[in-house]
Every structure is written in C-alpha cells, then in structure tokens.
Length: 392
Ligand SMILES: Cc1cc2nc3c(=O)[nH]c(=O)nc-3n(C[C@H](O)[C@H](O)[C@H](O)COP(=O)(O)O)c2cc1C
Image (cartoon, rainbow, N blue to C red; front, top):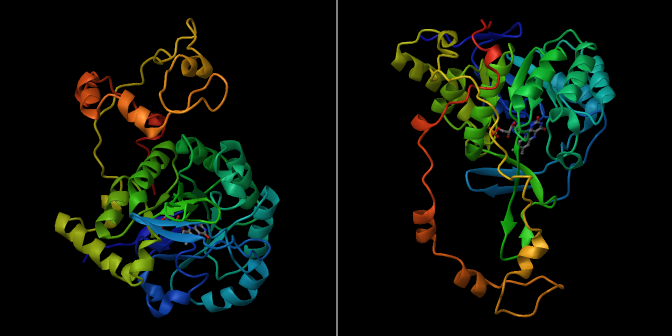
C-alpha cells in the first residue's frame, strides 16, 4: 500500500491531489460526485471583497486541447462567502484552501484579515495571476516587488499558511516566485491560465467577448511543467503544480520535477469524477515503480549537468550599420498588384506574395542547419543557487 500523504507548509494532506480554483464550484458543490475525503485539498473559487458579475458572454470556449475562459472572477463576494459557503465547508474532512483576489494590496490584506479567524479555512491561496481582470494588466504576478508586497500584506494579516498563485505569462517566473518568497509566502501554486485567443473565422469574431482570455487544459501542460520546475529551482518553497493535468501520469510528471502536490482544473469539466480516481491511479503507478511513499518520489527527476552560463551573445542587430527603415524597404519593393495604400508604401496581395516568396522546400534547403544540442554550449538553469536544498 503506497503512502500518498504529503506535508507542505505545515499542512498534512492525505494525498497530493487538489481541485483547482474556479473549476470545481465555489465551496463543496461537487461533493456529490467527488467525496470530500477523496482529495488532499479543496480550493475555493476566488473570493473578492465585493461581488463581481464577471465579464460579458461569451466567456468560455472550447479550443484544441483545452478551454479559453474570461470568466473575470465572477463570485458573490466575501460577505456571501462568510455567510453561506463557509457554513457548508465546516467539518469537511479535507484541507480547505480559500483563494482570495483583489485589485490592490490593501484588498488582499483585508480579505486575509477578515477570513483569517475562520477555523473552516486551513490555508489561503492568493490569486496574483488572474488574466481576466483589468485585461490581465494587474502587476501582482508580473513584478517581483509587487508580488512581495501583496504576500507581506497577507502574511501580516493571518497566521494561516499562504500560497501565491503565479502566472505563466511572464518571461522569468522564477523571479516572481522569489518575490513571493521574499514577501513571506509559505508556498506557490504554478500556474494559472496562459493568455490566449480564439477566432471564429466564419463569423469573423473572437471566441471570447474580451477577445483575449486564459488558456487551460491539456495543451497548457508543457508550459506549466516548465513554470513549476523553475519555481522549484528558484525558491525553497513547496510548489503545487497546476496546468493541463488529465491523468495520473501527468500528476507524476509534476511530482517528479519536485512539486509537493498538484491541482486539476479543466479536466474536471469533461470528467467530473476524475479527481476521485486520481489518488488510486497515482498509487498504482508508484507501486509499479516500487516506490512506497510519494514523498520519496518527489523531486527524483534526473537532469543533465549543465555548464555555467557563458558571456552574453553579440546582439543580432548591429548598431554600427542601422537597418533600413520600414518605409525605405517598402519603397524598394515593386508590386504588380494595385496602387500603393499610402505614399511610399506598396500593398502586397496574396498573389504577389506567393509569386515572390521562395517555396518552403527551397527555404529549408537554403537555411543553414542549427547545431544539435550536443554541439551547443549548454546553459545553466538561471536559478542554480536554489538547487540541492532539502525540502520538507
Ligand atoms: C472556467 C475557469 C475558471 C477559473 N477560475 C479561477 C479562479 O477563480 N481563480 C483562480 O485562481 N484560477 C482560476 N482558474 C484557473 C485554474 O484554477 C487553473 O489554474 C488553470 O485552469 C490551469 O489548470 P488546468 O489546465 O488544470 O485547468 C480558472 C480556470 C477555468 C478554466
């Protein structure tokens, strides 16, 4: 019998499988399908200081390998959460995470202060990363210093463990993870949805009313794995992996790279009972490997030794001989199709483009082949200093 229990940020979970915020009800509405005691933890929908109606419809669309959504944190607000949702959560035999959101640092602190005294809540997950509020422009998950400020404010308002939920929509998620750690976060959730877009080419309209939204589901997994890995490497914090998990093997990939636990979101829409099945399936996979405790398996990923980062490469564009401006390049182009759309600029129709463009096969033949990985100088992971630490 494999021991699936894990300990993170002082919380003991019976197994490493949690529901992902916003995909499994506000509270425990899904317990008639997945018994509360089947999961390591339940994560609430994001609760905000005031009720939010969310974004206009359409705000969810199925796309290849996942969903686009722009729900926009629709929820009934903290007062309703306190009065109704927490009532039904009382006595739930699972670890309860309340996910909180806000539009300013003070909002987060007030939420944590107000909810922090409630025994039904075991931990907070701070949603730094919703792409659907203010067009994803809130800086909590893109600026390490702002992430630190939010976490400091929340930690100052509650004694409960606090997890920072990060966004994949940044260049270096490790920097944001370090910001959250500096602000006192007890753990990280990596990641929220990736910014995406869908187009109905017949109607000539975007799939979402907000045009751009958050992409989740199976297609997100490689990005989420990379983000979770960088967070594990960058900090000493326990990381909950999230993004694209649809089966037990996916769960094990996140655990192998060092995550303490995982969350499952979009996959529950097509298979609402999946979460109840996953712990047993994960145990079966570990048994097959001869692993007795999931904690022994965590972080067992073997990566090649990478050489230290070399000097920065020369810039691709030389500043000594400036490239011609766009206008100059357009002027030197001759086109047989139609008059120029603006002075000095030629409009290229499809015909002239296909005629002028070399065929793809000749392009492929002409392009020098890139060296294989084995020939290339290897880069060290940017967070090498954080590796090798013991994790609890
Ligand atoms: C319909 C929908 C609503 C979501 N609502 C929230 C939310 O309220 N708060 C939050 O932190 N994340 C929210 N998320 C993001 C998920 O919790 C999760 O981070 C993301 O979907 C990636 O995981 P997945 O690929 O398993 O779905 C939502 C995702 C979806 C699809």
